[in-house]
Length: 107
Image (cartoon, rainbow, N blue to C red; front, top):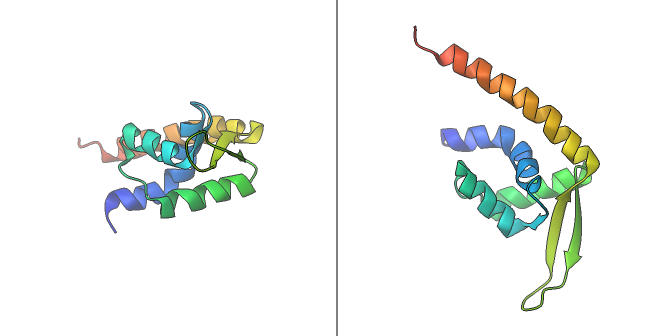
């Protein structure tokens, strides 16, 4: 397992919440947002279990919508709890990253 994969395991849920803070979206589009944000390709086998976990926790709300030119898509959006979690965990993450960066500084 490469380093990026290990790091992503710990922060994927938070990144998905962050991607949804930009507006509701469906799975493929969320994956595109994450990739555009520099996380690399996120496989469906990684993303969809995270979305289901966040939905079960009440942090995202999902609903199916029929498409005009294709199959129905499941759209996800942040719940109020999801937005609160993103604010809180995002602040915690920023402190954590700052601490890690401070430890890695070479004197």
